[in-house]
Length: 379
Image (tube, rainbow, N blue to C red):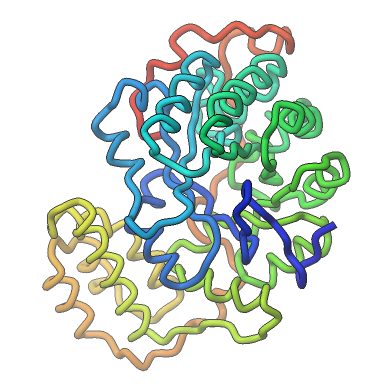
């Protein structure tokens, strides 16, 4: 069993040290954000989830989403698909064109537009179809030596847990590891993650198991691994507006106690760097700064910054505008420690999971839902 002080997680032949994975987040984990995170720490940084059919059809937006920085190693790409045939074609394309070094399969997304097609967190309920998809990806990736991993949730809801059986199926199909978000799809991002499920899955499988859910601080990662025996952690919302969390994680896994508490001046410098990276990636300053707007509230969470400046930063369209608002702030303002350990990003209420008609009737029905692969990319 891996222990927090002696992690030994690998991805294929690649050591993953520290044993930390950036969770794919739609509209967030593009090449610019991944580079910013890599500048602060180390680990595996996964791109936004992309649809297999959109990739196979060379959708322009999708091809932009799967771009990587020249020094980004390994290049980790997350796929979402419901049809084993299309999944196989997508992974064959990735291998043939050397698009990535690692493929992660998404079976954890709780978003209605995904689950209503039988995808994401809905799919492991259909155990035969789930197994066929993982097996297709693994077989297509094997000739190129590309490891395939699986990300999933506990199940659809409290009456339909699937994680233990799905974990065994993924392991038997050749998945290199299984990552578990300790919530059901019905929970979405509400309540607390159930780490006991992560422990149960770790006890069940021989392949590495990674834990995901409620890692807000580096010490949460150590505690999760200690309590569950997990081989690594997956970090999502905890790094929003805090890419330096990866520096804290590196320190924690190295046995060091220092944690990054940047003052407002350091945070503003990170914000500007983020906007610059987005501008470079998108090829235009205006587009980059506009895309950056969504991050402003996360970066400034807890800081005593007036509403007019917050609104101004969130409506800026150039680096000069950002600088003008930054100039009105006191860079020596200390980090708001009362925000530590608190949830960040999306929070919502539990809700009924939207599923295809008759989805729960037969777990062994491996029919691909009609129109399942016909949504726009960008999931």
